[in-house]
Image (cartoon, rainbow, N blue to C red):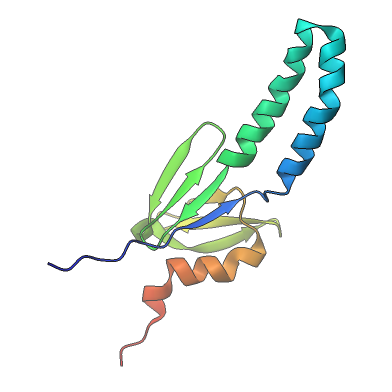
Length: 129
């Protein structure tokens, strides 16, 4: 019985240093929230939403599939449906599907193309010996 090693997962998320700004925002909002009373707690709703978005939005990429996570959705794209990668508007990377459609990778940038290509298309680039 041979077991395959687990697929390596690459996670593309927003930089964790963005959390520092949220912490500073919370510290600055505490005096305001305290001064306004219980209604001041509403100030923390957008901060909590921003924290949720920074942690959730992104893509999990393995050799078998790409899982794209948006604010309120998750989309799985099997490797067999991926024809290539494209750069949209000089800033955003998208998956080209075999049916001709594209799906944007929310946190991927052109600098990530070589790493994405290595993970997704490593098998197709090997030549027979």
